[in-house]
Image (tube, rainbow, N blue to C red; front, side, top):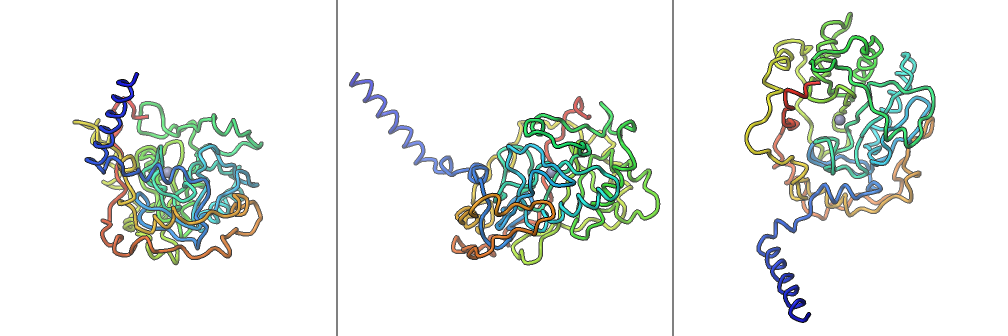
Length: 347
Ligand SMILES: [Zn+2]
């Protein structure tokens, strides 16, 4: 017995020794720290860093239900965003309803303080990205359980790269046109087959097509990205989209084999799975350390309600280092591409 405990002690010592010898192993992952947050940082609204490498303060939530929206997968606690985005979603839901769309099913926005997520999404980190389902809202309130389980419907024909014409309607195109109509919206990500459908069918004003960008995934939902909000001086803006419609060679590439070729060699870990706080703007330390608001309800936007705010919250402490110098070292990266899907999973 005694010898057994001694061996255990030695084992523990060995483990400790290993941890000392390899301090990188002990560094917590940013996704664990941000994924554990239940409420936003009570501070003035500000986005820090880039869509795929950052965090935000002063976030508010969109209510699970509005007249013209229902939020899905409530258990994920990803109904949070910069107030500019949350307000825009509420407006979009009203405008879309006036256009004849029965209401928005809202997918993931951001975690309460942003940052990398435990699962899914490379981006959605600074409160400026939101996923909207292509499935229109049913004319009844879904239960919490239904919102976990119901699947969205793909707009792409099985085993092809083209839109399923039995599902795609003019109303879907109008919904994307409406989303693109807001000056704050800089990008809308859709499956290449959907972009092609728009290129082939949109009549009249086509100037909005430049905002609609082909990307992997995004056949069940589309992704709205707004630009850096006014006042978010440490938000790193993305390169503007080309002004052309994007119905040219750049789209044709998606209908070649190359973007869908299975990756060769050993699988590389995803950035969000290895990112530590050192990879994020220094301000994200202060975002993590900031107090929470009194309650979720106090910072949730409800239908026809005023925009909630973190009124009275102290400004975010910047003593965790100089975020400016960190940001200078941020490369103007493009959104990292996920590993291309195997050819068998073209959807
Ligand atoms: Zn998304």
